[in-house]
Image (cartoon, rainbow, N blue to C red):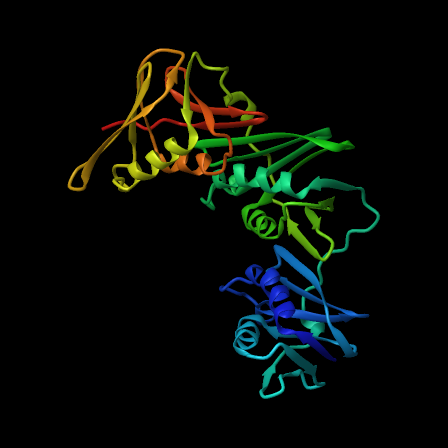
Length: 363
């Protein structure tokens, strides 16, 4: 195999796939990525056996072939080369030669036959999704995914699709984020899949503000096709919790507040939190919200924000980080923050979006 490639083009391809490769590997081949020539293009592929990513980049192919190369060492070498035009040659003994006009590296690869093959998805109906819409949806839900591996079923985002309705849900048991969207096509089957958070993170790295992608279902696997980039992932098995039963009715107490001011106030309050003292106190009056935080041996904060309160005056405590996560991913200037029920659940609703946060005990 031999080809000529632009350094920046090659680096962009490597950056697309390299986050999939884990620092903790069980097989040496999994620290490598696969390079395959395809007519006038080069396909780069990486996998950790749970998720695989491949991308296609333009190159000048002089000799067809394939090889696997250690991705960390290879990417470090390419970044340090100072010239734009590079030549790569894979020899029969799995030695890879990387050349510019003034420099030559030789590194040891492994045979392409050892690299795990990604599953094939053939003749299956594709669901078309707007990239900008999916990007916004995942930004507004994925932060609520549980990172506790003992709660495996909550370690991903639920994709629930039926006819032309799509619902995306994430929860860690202390907060719940739900997005409802309309699709531009009708799907004739009921889809319930849980996509792992690592796959969600790779989707967010690749989603653009224009264009579509295709979602294709396989047996316990899903494929996201961007065109030049393909992401294939195993799904999380099991039944997602019945989230609908915990959605409260619209609360009597609604606080209309400037989102950016609320976000900045929560960030300031979070500066005084510790693992033992996380709760920030919110006191809602008719025209002001008093935010306060007192942490022993750390300090105190008190701040007032102007609000419109349509309900009763009350006091409640929340983890400020759970409010920061949602406020920074919303875009509207003003939000309505509902305080609902005896436990004073915090709820934000907006145009198909629902975010629910459990209160914390004060003191």
